[in-house]
Image (tube, rainbow, N blue to C red; front, side):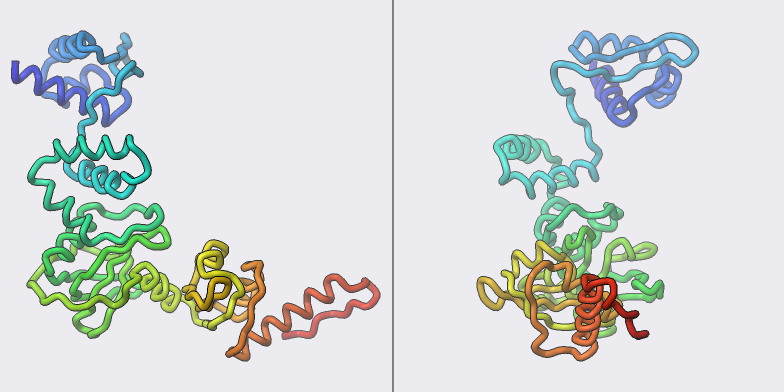
Length: 321
C-alpha cells in the first residue's frame, strides 16, 4: 500500500510538471510498466482526479480541470520561494493568510533555516527579474550567518573582477536583486547586481557585523545605480512632494524638503537628455545651484520650443551647437 501511495504522489507531481505525458514516457520516468501506469491513473480517477487520456500512436495522459484543486507538490526551492512570497503579501487578504498558515504547519524542518535566512535579510520592492535561486539562497545564508563571500563580478562596462565581501542585505529595487555588502579589498560599501555575479560564489570565514550604510537601503541601492552609469548629475528642486515626484519619474533619488517640495538628485548620460528628463516630470522646477551645463541645455530647449510655436515666417534655423 505504501509503495502504491508513493507512486500516486509521484504521478501527481509529474502531471504538475508537464501538461501532457505519453504512456511510455510516464512508465520510463517512474520505472514501472505501462500496465502499472494505467492502473495508477485509474486509481487517481477513483479518488476524484480528472485524468484525461487519449489512444493511438501519440496517445497519453494529462490532468484535466476538476471541481477541486489537487495537492500541489513542490520541490525544496519552489517551497521556499512560495513561502517567502506569501509572507510578503499575507497582509493583503484572508486567503493569503490561510495559505500561509497551512504552509507553516507543513514546511519541513530542513527548509525552516532557508526560509528564515531569506526573510531576515531581504528588503522587498517591485517584482524582480529572474536570478539563480541557489545563488540567492547562498547570499541570504551568508548575510544571516555573517560569512564572507568570494565571487567574480561583471560591472556595467563588462569588466570582470574578483571580489571579497561581507554581505549585509539583499535588496529588491528597480526590478532587480542587489547585494549590499562591505567590499573587503576596497574598504567601502558597495552594491552588486546579483545577476552579474559570475561563476560559483563561495561562503568563507565569519566576520564581525558592522553598522549598515543607510537606513533606507532601497534608496541607497538606487543612488549607487544612478551614480555608476550616468555621467551628468545635478540636484534639482522640484515643486512636488517626494512621493509624487518619484511616481512620475523612477530614476535618481528624491529627498523631501517640505510637503510640496523635494530635491531630486538626477542623472543622465548627457546634459540635453537630463533637460528632457526635467520636462518629463510635468512639474515646475528650479536649478538654484546649476550646473551651468544643465542651465544652458534647458535654455536651448526653451528657445527650440519657442521657435516651434512661432509663426512660420518668423522662424529661423537653430544655431549649430
